[in-house]
Amino acid sequence: MPVAPSQSTDLANLASLAGLADLDPNTLTDRPERLVTDAWLAPATELALHLLDQADPLALAAGSHTAPGHTMLLLTAPRDGHPAIHLRLPDGTAPVEPRPTDRPTTILPLVGALDLALYHDRDDVDHDRPQYLRTLDAGQLCLLHTGARVRLTGCPDSAQLVASHVPVDVPGTVRLNPGEYRAAADDARTRLTRSRPTGAGRTAGPGLEDVPDLRAADLPRIHAQSGVLHRLAADRGRLSYLVTTTVLAPERYEASRTTPPLDRLVLSKADDLGYEIRLNANPRPGNQLLPHDHAYPFAARVLAGGCLHTVFLRTDGRAGGPVSSRGLRPAVTTTELPGSAYTLAPTLAHRAVVLPGTTTLVLRGPYTAAHPATDLIPPVSAWPVPAGGEAPVHSRRMTDAEHRTLYQSLAATGVIDLLPGRL
Image (tube, rainbow, N blue to C red):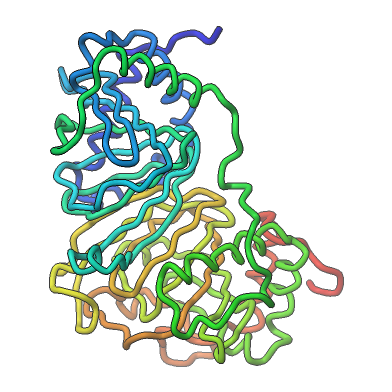
């Protein structure tokens, strides 16, 4: 039998995690390695099981409820600085219509997958037009900031700890009685003690040759094609070959760029179909701190390292005009670990505070608009050193020497294999 955790210590740690959702994400950019980890997963799962064993259905049933798509079991009420802790048990059915989050909330996925869709405004909800899509796996921390309009859909064997310093009181839900609480608690124990793989091993998806025409694709369709990144990540030989041969393919090499935030290699280019597949590497952390937007939708998959990722809503309306950091408010912050993936629309801005050595695969969709930004690009003094004494530019082709250095770095960190004939 496992030793029961120290409840006071673990509750204090969970209170600290719950408090992160209350903070301005700008305060979380220092030492991201403290958060970008799944080290909390085992103790949080043990804590959930311990609280279930100690739970008094007569006292906690009234603070628990069922709602479309899930049941929420109250494990501890907020007191003495500790948050209210619920265990969320999805049933696999359609959740309630998304509405703005009315309290900062921390979600800790313990087992199974949890799908998250973020909507910019009411019009997006009415037309089922999500602007950010992702699947959260066990070990990925998720912070919902006040005002985030999200839909959460969990697989029927998943479970998430939900922590908030404000009691969860959702209108229209059905309170549990003690007997229903006991039955739900038994279901929760079964879920938490059943071993299952996470999305880090996800490999299903089309091959590079099978990606369809994405020129008119909406975000869900691009999200559906992001499996190509999982498949490429699992095919180490193919990935190594594409990285190695970038300099031998003129069109791909010309499109491979050195930029202020990172270097990118183009692994597959299909302009006639509206997409490109890239490998982003060699991040420059000092240039990652400003939020930025993109002129295209894209899907990203982490190969190595990780990041603290915040998605921002525009407070001045939808994309189309200049935007500055003052015109953004945070919606969702997540920890990205190897194997995690997300898909983002150009209507939103985001920031990835990366760990050293972070490498990602990206499926870039069709260009939709000019890149609107004012103070969201690092200053010229922070741009990469120019090649051959030229004046600094925001984006330039990677030199052969830079490609060789990047190739060797990717091989040294185990992202790719060294292939014969390439130094």
